[in-house]
Length: 227
View 1: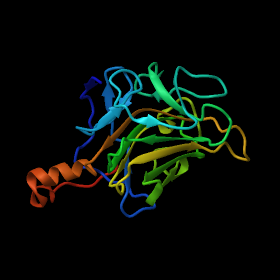
View 2: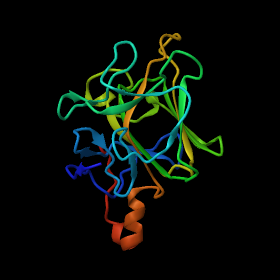
View 3: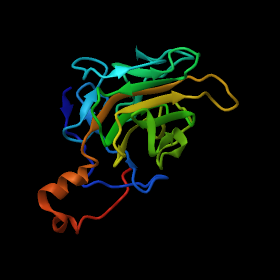
């Protein structure tokens, strides 16, 4: 997929700690040629659900959609252009039946980084990183566990509920399960929507710097939170 190199907020990785002491999250992004938010992680493998897809297997209860469908799913929203994603994206679940999840299998390969353009973030959206069918250590995240400026209110529009979310330094995973459990009080489960799903074997962009210039070369880099 073509990408414009607009943005890219600091390659030296800027960590925001989660419940895990190892996994970190930030909201760095690049702007894809089709106007959607995508990974800024050079070398990552990306599924944009359009052309040139990587051939991963998506199981269970999910569907590729284009455009918003009232009561079912909202296309991710790009606040920069004040527009909804007009390309194909993925939505979980497709139907209000169990399981309310879809698992992505990466063909036996293992990875350490995941990124996704997460639309209308809900508190009941959940990501689980799996290895050999088991959830990895501290590998479960819900929409309301993301750091600020994320706000898990399910809003179709707005930057705080539509973000490119990066998970760094994840224990090796070979699959990821996406679930939408439903709203407060067990209301409709719809939906967990995302586009431009990306993975990499490198844990974080900072690892690239370590390989190229060594620890001494990055001592002066300041950690700061990306918003």
